Image 1 (tube, helix red, strand yellow):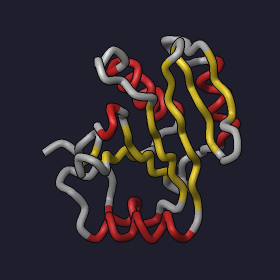
Image 2 (cartoon, rainbow, N blue to C red; image 1 turned 135 degrees about the horizontal axis):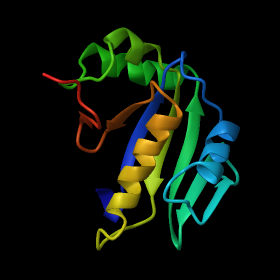
Image 3 (spheres, rainbow, N blue to C red; image 1 turned 135 degrees about the vertical axis):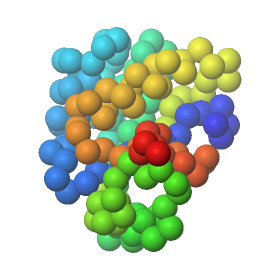
Image 4 (cartoon, rainbow, N blue to C red; image 1 turned 60 degrees about the vertical axis):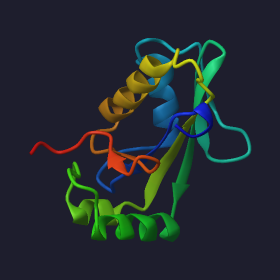
Length: 141
C-alpha cells in the first residue's frame, strides 16, 4: 500500500457495459453501504466515492496506451488470471483506483466493498493490483 493508500486498476473489457455516468448512478443509488457523497471528478474523467471524510478516486483512462499496457500484461500474466489473455489484451479502457490515505487501516472494509460493488455493477471488470503484481480475484486452481 504505497503512501498508506490503496491502489488498483480495473480493466474494462469491450463487452462490459460501462460509462462514468452509470458508475456514478450506481454508487449514488444502489451501493451498500451507502456512500456519503458520489460525484464526477474535477479536471479529468472519473468519479469520487466518499465514506465520510475518506474516499476513493476512480480515474477513467482509455485508448491505445491503455491497450498496449494490457497487451503486455497479457503476454506474461501473473498466475491465476481471472480472464483469458485475449480478453486482458483487448482492454483499452480502465479505471485507475486510488484511495485517500488510510494509515490505521480503518477503511480496509470500505475499499474491499467498493471494489466488490464495482465488479457487481459492471460484470467482466478485471481487478489488478500493480503494486503487488497480482489479480484481485484469482482464477481457481
